[in-house]
Length: 83
Image: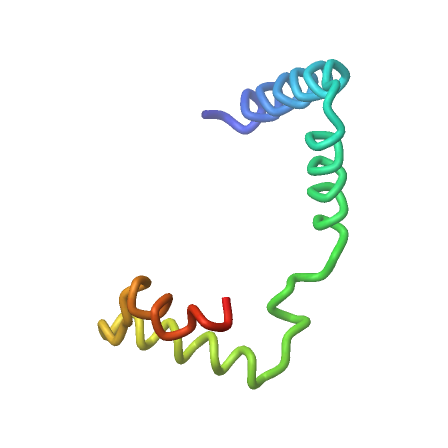
């Protein structure tokens, strides 16, 4: 799609969203939209966590890729007394 056509489509989408938002009646949807709007303004969470937390996440991803996983049911049994 050409850039100009994409810009027009995006503007149409924005107008449709605005129209839809004005019809919302439930507080939950409005609160979720406000949260979404506020998260755009915040820094990326990855930049806010410690190096230790990043390392733990990277290790977990590496374990997952290597197949070193524990089934959910097993974990639930191990930790059910604390849940």
